[in-house]
Length: 538
Image 1 (cartoon, rainbow, N blue to C red):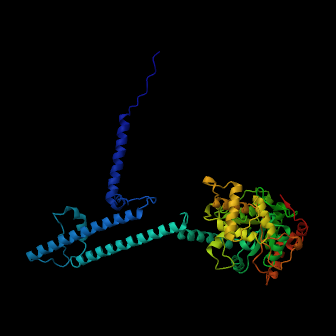
Image 2: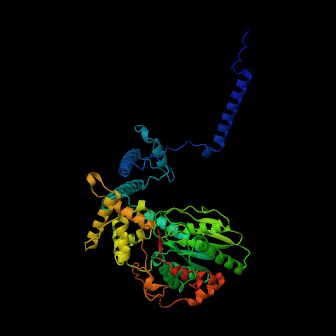
Image 3: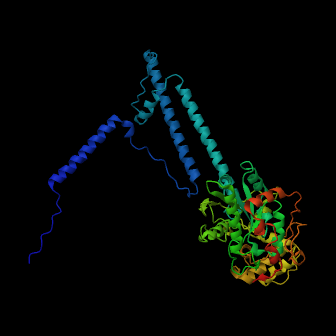
């Protein structure tokens, strides 16, 4: 059988000629267009020298390149001046002076390198050109020297900052300012767009996660037309009498609702509040927002902005509300660490309600003049700093031990959690060091040779505090009535004085708009029952 003949890959002549015609036609059109519009067909300029930012001596290398360019420019100007002087001498010997407006012939047969520079220089009149060249050269020289001094000073400052920091992880002040401005802009966007502001607080330390400056800003916005509700989240981490005291205290300023937005972490030390469950508290908040939306009778949806410090549970509050309308508990991403939410997010509940999630912001505090070390330790204890960004966790543990030592009951529970015997040291530094050494041994946080890793043990303690495995809460201010105060467990002493002037008129008026009266708004329903049960669910 004869095999089939293979098809030839040879190209037909007519097709080849057709391609050549098209190529030639395109070349003619481009040539013609270049003559008509030469500015559109200029060759590419020489690209700048690109040096990677990771190169350690980039600034010095750029300075050397600039210095070499400056020297070449000075040499070129010197040659131009020498040729110009020579040409003037030749003209003076011939006895012929140039007429007004006539230019000297600046061509130089001996120096063919400077043809382009000479052509550019023809546009300048002969008189005063040497003074201009000298002025230009001196100005460039002084600018180069100034830039070198500035580069050296900035380099020394960077090195000193790196050495002083100890770890080299410190961010520049400009980047911090930029990120802070961005977050402040997000907060102002939420404030302008929202009709109701939900200010989420941590029930373990409500005043520590509260800013009266922000409350005044909300009150002053849009002619006092916005509404503010305080949300006490993580109520399962405090006993019922303490929760009752904080609700009574905070309701003298603004309407306040308790909320359990999500389940507790594993092995967390929680309290049973009976009727104050996840479904009950989130349902109460949802009903109050629906009541306000129906009372306004607007043709648009009511916008509800959720603000607060990092890791107080803002996204969990939104997820709890979305679950009330048949949605999932994952409308917003959540996490145990701070910084999960980094941008604004809008979630529509129904045609009457719209939620705005915002990233956590460290708002201005109520007290000024605090030391930076104490303030950073406080922010770590309220979980506003992610563990990866904590440079020195030991001061935060020192502050935690100082607070828990005011309550013998809480301090004993802390020692029992790690199985540590009573500590006999007196000073706070020795107490922290001894405590962390014991924790490192119990939790296996040891380095080479069995040396306790203090920083790793401190991070372990901070993580246990964040997840609720370490019991601790701040008691309500003095003279605040509580249910079952005689049998209430003693917590960390509050440094906040009892409220002097309250805002009962505002609270009463706003409570009617949200219909909070039957939803633990009076502090009686549900809490009296929970006040009888102080047992912790292990």
